[in-house]
Amino acid sequence: MEKIKKERKKLTKKQIITIIVSIVISLLAMGGIITAFILNYNVSTPDKVSVYDDGKNVYVKAEMNDNYSFYNFKFTQEGQDDIIIETENNVLTLEFLESEGIVVGQEYQISVKYISENDGNDTDYSEPITWMVYKIIQAPILSYEEGFLKWEAVEFADYYKVFYNGTIQNEITTTETSLDLQTIEGGKFEFVVVAYSNNNDIYRKSIESNKVSQEVIHKYLAFESVEFDSRTKIMKIKGYEKLDIINVYLDSLLYECNNFKTTFNEEEKIYEYEIDLSLFYSSQTEIGASPAIKDEYNVYDGEITYVQTNQGQE
Image 1: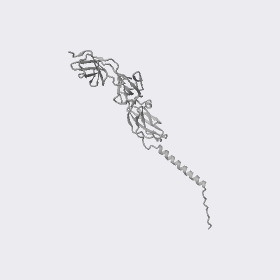
Image 2: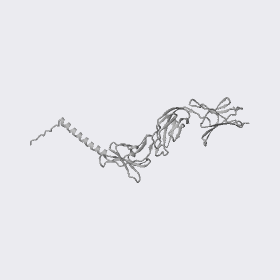
Image 3: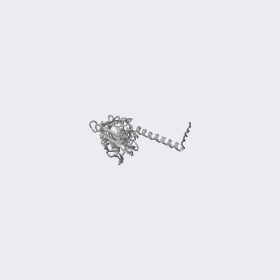
Image 4: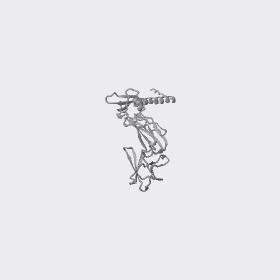
């Protein structure tokens, strides 16, 4: 029996390369299908949305997910139709939300879901959070003009606080939109203004205004009255400013006094000072007082206030 020999054909190098390329292309195509399925398959719900502010604006934020095309933010109120906002952005500003019907001062349940380009592959909505919508008051714009700090009224602000030199001790609260700098002690200061609402839950305080640096020369007011009792040797003074040093005049002699009793009369809105002159007074006939010059920023250039009647004279 004749044996027939079959010759095996060997693949050329070109054919081998062609086969390998075909296999790689097939694998890549299959990988793309699998990847597309994974990316568009509803495998989980988004995390809860968050609300934050930067001191100027308020934001609602969903975690970014590049595997989906859109975000659906849902705002729910009992007894009201849901407000659903579809957007490509994962962060929404309060200004935008107000344009979509969200109302400051109202409470909402907020949730979000991711939207796929392919039908049926959207996620479920996240767990909702409760948000009472609040707004940040706009910061005032501060200026200086002829001895006054000035600023325009700010919407939603009920009052303002003027801070100077960065300490809470140097703080003035006012419902006005200006401040007479003669009402504060003199010095070199840096001023800012912050706007506040009486309803801080809804309208949060503004950030600080622009800074204004100003040198303040404070001129003390003359005393309202000066009295002296020659029996007790007590001088009683009434004035509209709190003083650390008082000049006392006994005829031609001048005494700088810093040891005296100070009280504030709430009813009259005036400071009352009592100075014991028993160490200085003998039988002088002309008795007076004035605020003392404290430093280059706190000065007095007015008249001496003299005792009109010398109580207790024998």
